[in-house]
Length: 325
Image (cartoon, rainbow, N blue to C red; front, side, top):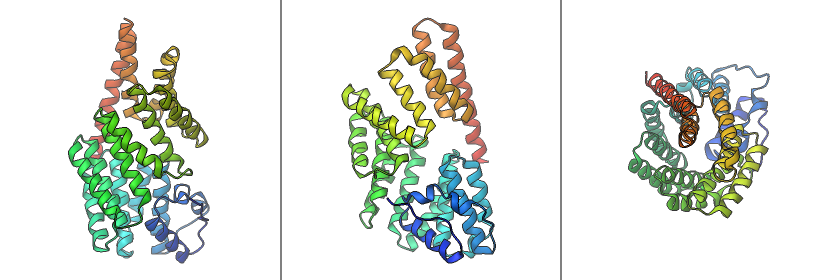
């Protein structure tokens, strides 16, 4: 995957890059459009739309989802002056952002609008992306059978286009689904299929994939392979400055390889995720640390961390309610 120059000087150049994003959504340049954003002021409807749309992509990649939504709303002022497929991409990004903000009903609503446009254009690649996003939404709300049906629909659509990246994405997501269903054997089958399709330069997805591979190998007792995935994944996460997964890999090491470091590592991870307001991880590590203290009859500390997990659950539920308003 090669980098492209994203310092855009005119509308035609922007339109060309946006077209490349439509047809190659995996290209790394759109994950870091810093040159495009620097010292750039929008002028004219097309420039205005593309400027705010690129900003939304940038903030989405940085996990600043509220900012991404603000940029998409600004892009929406001129979206219906754009070409139909650009409107489809705007709907799709709205759907992706709302999914991250736990607004599942809104996410599926906008995903349906994007799917309609991409179907009219027979854009199988983006239709597959929509089916994948439907699957993620269903998975997040616990509708696992519906999620897997959408993922398999995405795979069928991939057969009509050159969709290596989407194949990888869907295989990975099916692996995530079976991990949540406590089915590590099936999870590993799909995670390995995804791993074989990953580009070495795709640091973000390699990190996530290696983390889940390590988790599931540890669960079935395959410590040697789990350790290999762990060490490779931690190295990739650190090289990519992915602090979230550095903490997650360190917690994984403490859980399975360094039990003497469990307490301090989990406290450090919880502090980090509290600061970032990543409530799902505060819940996960708070509950595990509470159980750790409970087994050692350190009941005050067990209560404190179980209570913290409950508080995080309430905050997460509140965010979901706000996203539906």
